[in-house]
Image 1 (spheres, rainbow, N blue to C red):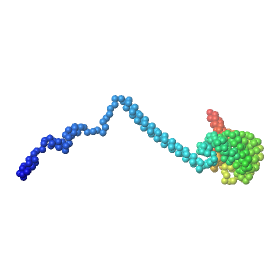
Image 2 (image 1 turned 135 degrees about the horizontal axis):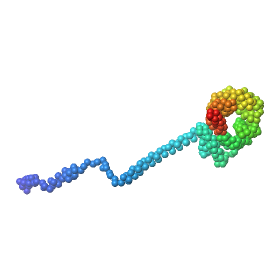
Image 3 (image 1 turned 60 degrees about the vertical axis):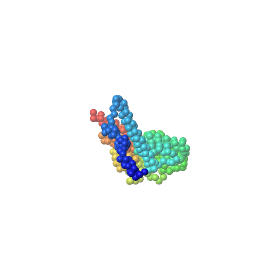
Image 4 (image 1 turned 45 degrees about the vertical axis):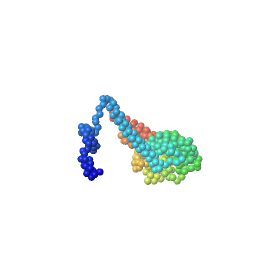
Length: 378
């Protein structure tokens, strides 16, 4: 092909215009669709959430109630779980504290008996109720004998019986207390144990027999206790005091007075509670001898000595008895206002020692004098 023809063909191909349809297709490919842009321009801006309407207010209300009920149920459930967990933790912590710090229990008794004795400790000290305490101890004793198969003569069983006797006595169940103390005393004697523990048990038995006016048995156990007290001067003094009370009730005042006079000389100055007990006994003896003024003086001395140590159980008990005795003597002299004051004091003392039997007796005296003052005022 000649050079002139080749240049002519190339010029025609360059100058030939592109097809209209092809250019439109390219434009539509490269540019955005016109229709979609128009649609977007005409659409309103989106709202976060379009409002919804209901044709049934009842259904809407029930739905709200159900959702709120679910929320309340969840909160209640979480609260119950939290409170239950906290209570369980505190309960277990209290048992650990009693077991390791305040009142350890023998390991051979097991978990159930140990918890019962912890409950008894609470009812004996923190929230006193000796009826409940005696129930707990009795059940622990049953477990020791029937389930754990412990021997009657074992130290654990004897200690449980002594504790049960103590609780029964404070609950006012004197015959039950005598029974348990006597069993414990016999078991201790059977083991050849005439030590302080056996002597104290015999003294408690003598005290309880005296309270139910069985003077013969009271003297028998007190005499045995005094004979076996050995060199324990404080214990001897307490036994002598009970013997003096026994003789005073039998109107053997001279013998009682001689016992008390000797006892008062041996009481240490530091033992204010024992001194108060002796002074109160002397007051009762003097009253029995008809020496009312001396009796009132000894009663007041006993009250003053008892007030020196209000954390001591013996001082509290003696303070209640002496206050009640002085109230009686004032009542007999017709000084009802002062008598009521001492009766009130006796009731307060009995509340402190949780002695239900004495408290009932003091309250009767209190109410009687209140009634007399009321009638006198009318």
